[in-house]
Image (cartoon, rainbow, N blue to C red):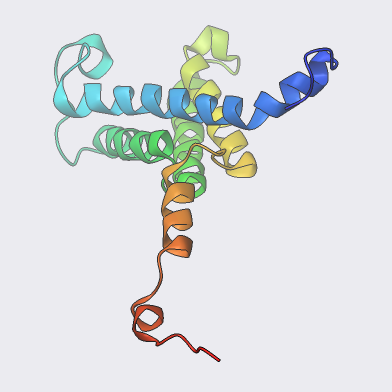
Length: 158
C-alpha cells in the first residue's frame, strides 16, 4: 500500500483490481436481473409488463436465459471471460436486430442498455474478473489442498 502522501494515481492503482471486481459484480447483477424479469416475471416482468417470455420462443426466451445465466456467472466470477463473451455477443445481436433498424444512434432507437452491456462485457473479456472472483478462490483452494497421493506418501526422514 502506498504511503498516504503518495500521488493520487499511485493510491488509485492499488484499488484498481478491486474496482474491476466491483464493476464485474454490478454489471453481472444488473444483467441477471434483466433475465430474471423476463424468465420469472419478477422485477416488473418482461419489458415491464409483469409477464414472462414464453419458454423456447426465439429470440426472447434465449436472450433472457443468456442474461440470467451469464449474469450470474459474471456476478460470481465463474467462467466470467466466456460468460462475458457470450453475453456481449448476445447484446450485439440484440442491438443490431432490434434497435438498429429503428435508427443507428442508441439514444434514438432505445438501444442504450444493449450497447452498454455489449461493451461492458467485452471489456471484461479482456480484463478478466479481478481478484474477487470465485474462480480464483477455487483455484487457490485446489493448489493448497494436498492430493490423495500426497496424503498417503510417508515422509522421508534421514
